[in-house]
Image (cartoon, rainbow, N blue to C red; front, side, top):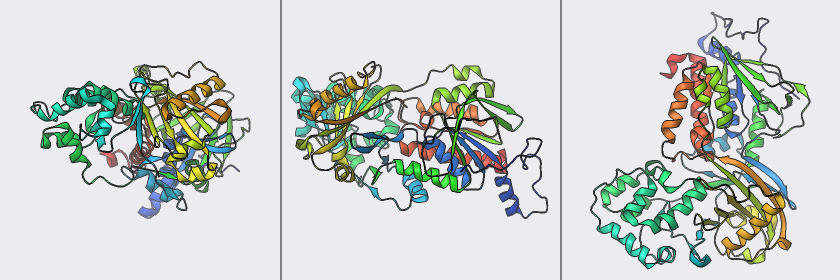
Length: 525
């Protein structure tokens, strides 16, 4: 069933635009009517677009969401791998800020929120194929104590002595260095940077350590460095009082959140179209028109489904009082540039790196003991894969789901300036490479005969908010977009990667747009 949006009048203008909000209405009723007759189009059905649609719909605004692919959820998805329906893409969220927990509480209050049962991390790809656990007393790989045995195993005696010199160095530039890589190398030496810090930043963020902003990636570290006078002491200082799980997930997987959002949106009268690719955005005064390429097949759903079969109906132009662009960077720039009359806006190459992830289901009882914890990060340049997540070691509910002796592994390929090793391979060869890399990273001989299933995803990994220059870059985009009344842009390319960042930013930016179109531009000043 398709739920209709509020109808425009015969001239194509909304009742709000035509001034038909009754002058005798009470102020509250006037606002209710204003919201009800405000038409919003959200372009993009990933998590940012779904959150933007929800923020508008829950105050009564009329919303239509269009998604170019055949399903909702973006980087949150699922696939049949072997005998199991498993998560692909995003599988958890950072607890920082609490934005995702609040969203889950709103739309999926019956969900069971879980924390990892195993968060141990290892570094692999050392000399002669060695591997060692990441020290527990560290921040972004920077050790609090260079003499920790786990640290020495990773950087050797010479690296340990060099790291110790940090404590003896005069605090000449303390607190001034924003580049994580340059800070670590200058204070603790190249081996700490290359064998402890780089494996984490490349695997987690897709960034070289030199391109990570210390102030954002490790809040408080620079101030602690000023107080203590040495980097190891600063790490120990910022870790004091740190407690609680850093990440959370859902028992049963993250696709439940997408399904719940779709269901709540349908309950609020939002129309959800899949297989509908927006091709143009035209502004006329304070009204927008979203155009679609010829032969766009639109599939609508008002249920909890996250995908639908196309009904082959053509989606005509959509008029709107407000538009939220929630696509990837390239598509967003292509829409915004002509709408703002700024062709140079589209000329900026998208940021991020190409990444492929291969999910394996293997029968390997020797992995029941999780010999290398839940995460293994590879020393850059040492392996084809950048890292591995042992999902069944990490999540107890998933281990129960697949059963003893069976394991789910996710291997990431692709680093800054390095094409994924799986690129150009067919799916079978990519799976075979993932099995070989998994064997090396885990120190356990896996083979094709014990591989139950494999699934491959390819995407562009958006830079995190901690990427040097990202904040200024995003602010420049937002400043240009905000000059156009009734327009907003959301998504990981602006907020930074990570579900917590995306959700919090989508809520904040949609609230700005919502206040602008309901109360006028003065409300945003």
